[in-house]
Image (tube, rainbow over all chains, first blue to last red; front, side, top):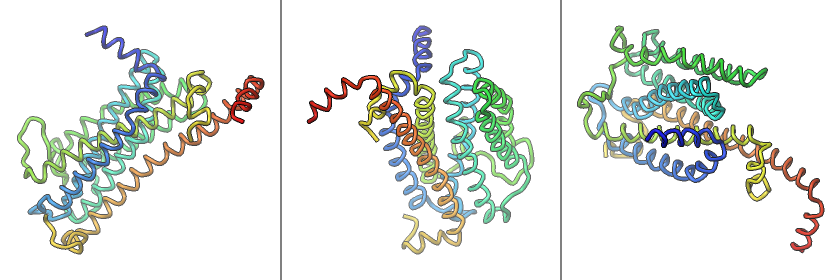
Length: 253
Length: 72
């Protein structure tokens, strides 16, 4: 078991292995994203019953909650990748962290935008400075900070290190986001889904939400793979295996 | 089916603006996240591919002649 983990680790550290493996995955991840999105949104927008309090505005949940979950998970993954880079100097980890940052920031932005739009008909206001919204806005700024550090040009090694440290420090914000609705008085409703409890949602409302959450993770994986492959192509451009790729030899686009 | 007509579906019971604005903005952000790395990949391949082909031409001019003759 341990040896298997060590072998997987070494493979993951190999840009060539990652590049070749993922070239077969892109199509399937894209297909899964499209199918999941169509099924989830048809069920969520057309078949789920309207909320008895919020009416149809509750349908925003099908992007808001998945985006917010992925934005937080992405930050954790980015910090873990940063730690792997700091501890073992694995370059691939730094490239993955660099790929994740703008994608996580995008999902964070989606969560904030849809939250504000949802807040207007539900609370009567676009924005309040309460714990959940503020900590989520802080997450977006943390993403921006990490991205700025990753793109500081002077020394790539140093900028990756700085970004990894900021990501690790920023992890403190994740439990704050999660528990903000319990620790402080807030307009934001408590978590819709809890792993330890039976969901309070009607199954017809719940199923599309679960589909959309899974689909958003699949889409996230696809986006991270696309960007990581670009990082690999750029950093390994002088390596013979990249130069021997059919797309480089004029075979592809 | 919760809605009885397309108009009713689009109206979302007075909440149409909020629902469709949410979905529209999200779609824009996601499309940008798909398109940008695809453009970047094309640019990388175009620029690096040119460099690779130039290098190969310089190094193996003789081989190229043979290949060209075979093509012709």
